[in-house]
Image 1: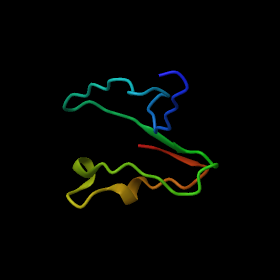
Image 2 (image 1 turned 135 degrees about the horizontal axis):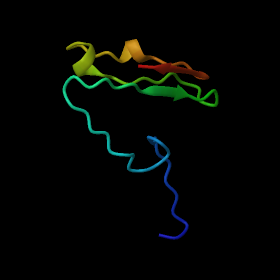
Image 3 (image 1 turned 180 degrees about the vertical axis):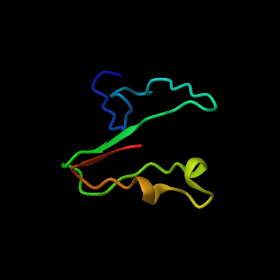
Length: 69
């Protein structure tokens, strides 16, 4: 509706984000950027890729930093 705003975490700046199709044995590279305007660290929990207990700590990105996985 007109005048409606939405605050969202996006992929490639759109909601919904672009479709990512990945097949077994494909190589996928993602970059997580945490702007320096944020006050908290962020991560991506690739639990299936980094172990049964989760892998969020492996992808921790502090404000003003980025990581490519």
